[in-house]
Image 1 (tube, one colour):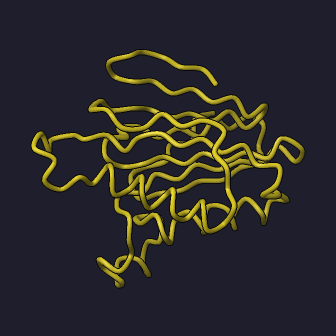
Image 2: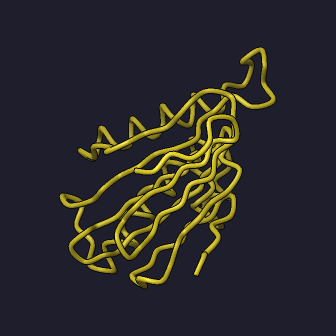
Image 3: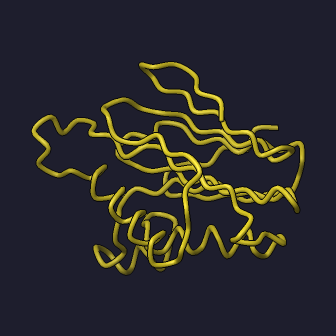
Length: 159
């Protein structure tokens, strides 16, 4: 059963029938995490790097921002029995879309925020598919932790 994770959204699950999926990762970033021992995982689709841009929105929806959404994702999977030391961590997105001149660099700023948060918290990514200028879809299968990334130009990547 597909469980859609929208923009500025996050879902977690232990249901082996669940497939968490997010679409249209352009400059946004998708973070998928999975603990293979308890078979629990989660998927976050955040838009912006830093919640100080709009603290009111950050309180209302922490999943909009990297610095509030990523901790929320990990804590939510911990509540399902997940353990950071066992986590498989996948990152996708961070492209430069509709910003040909690179004026805003939202994708790069989002990626820098992820790297900073992961570095501070000793989180190592197992795989990342970032940058470029194409949209991606990211899926995580809760039953086994398999990941699929569909790039609008490059096709399907299975992890």
